[in-house]
Image (tube, rainbow over all chains, first blue to last red; front, side, top):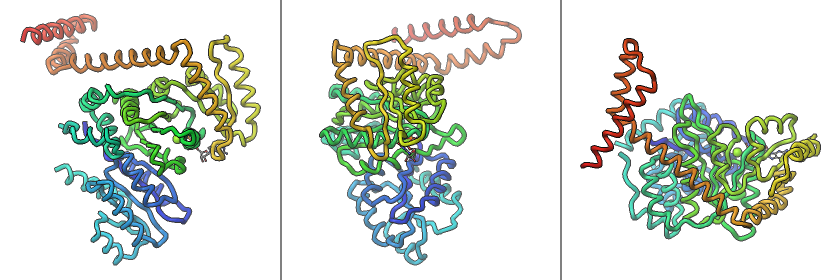
Length: 134
Length: 324
Ligand SMILES: Nc1nc2c(ncn2[C@@H]2O[C@H](COP(=O)(O)OP(=O)(O)O)[C@@H](O)[C@H]2O)c(=O)[nH]1
Ligand SMILES: [Mg+2]
């Protein structure tokens, strides 16, 4: 049986809107993934713990608050601590392109800017999963 | 083929690694062969985790209750494993598992382990998988295991029915109890929770429910009705008390042991059915069936005859296996 790809989607930060994260979660579900949606106001610790317990393949973080340059490294640090080296970390939200590049250089799989077509995210994960298995 | 579970992973699990626990749950969820390997290995260490099943209509507040209940259990010093089941979309095979959203209070408590599980279609043996996952949590050392499922569909009901105490969650909305009766929820409840008691019509809903329950013949255990406002934790102490009372009740006269024996028997029946089916439908059997269906127009064999031929073929291949 083909293994289902499991994706954790959560929103890190203090702002109270989760429409974007929900849209992405639904799109990933429609793309055939098992999406664990953990909701608003997630701390890096909550994200890492949920990812561990749910044994996900992918973590998708939505983030608007501007603290991305501290939050993503913190999540990566916790992922490393939990031996989640084979887990793909993705980000979305309002992140300036140069900082997005920087984060991608540090090990974030990809940062998707505002207005990204959700189908592109589905494709990106599918492609990543296909190359991983091979 | 999938790789077998390594001894290293099992050892990590036995020394308390939550990562290994998560990986073993994936193993039993993804692959029957691995489930066998894992549980063969672990079953000797199965403990006595007490199992709670929580079910009810979508949006009734089940996850919020699970969150509060887990907090209550944790306050008594016990550990908790949670298996939250949500449906897989039959069209895309994807699933949106949103129960964690309501479980933020316990999200980073090291004494709680939450696992979301998708139904993955009816052919997957959902109830088996949920129970296998619970067995893994049990061996890991969790004192309480809570199943959350939506109260629709037989396989979801099967999961909670396999619990020691079943809690059915209803809300004041009119007609809810009637709906519940239709869905077969009334029969399986050991405790009823009327959640959203902050809403209009709550006390009337409780009365209605109690009236319905009074119509039933008195039994050794008569399911109580508890009102709650889950987000505020209101009524949770009462729910916890009823759970403990039901547990006490089960511990009398060997009821719990009998219940668990029954559960195991049912599980073994199901596993045997699945196993036999797998063994039965080998390539040869499928070809035989295809040929019979092909010739159906001219031969007009009755379905019983076809089954008889398939059975004969099956017995013959068993015989051959025995002789080898
Ligand atoms: N007013 C009110 N809302 C509640 C209560 N319990 C849960 N809710 C809300 O009902 C919605 C669904 O809750 P959830 O726990 O996800 O329900 P589930 O689908 O049964 O797991 C959420 O918005 C909760 O905040 C309650 O006692 N009163
Ligand atoms: Mg729920």
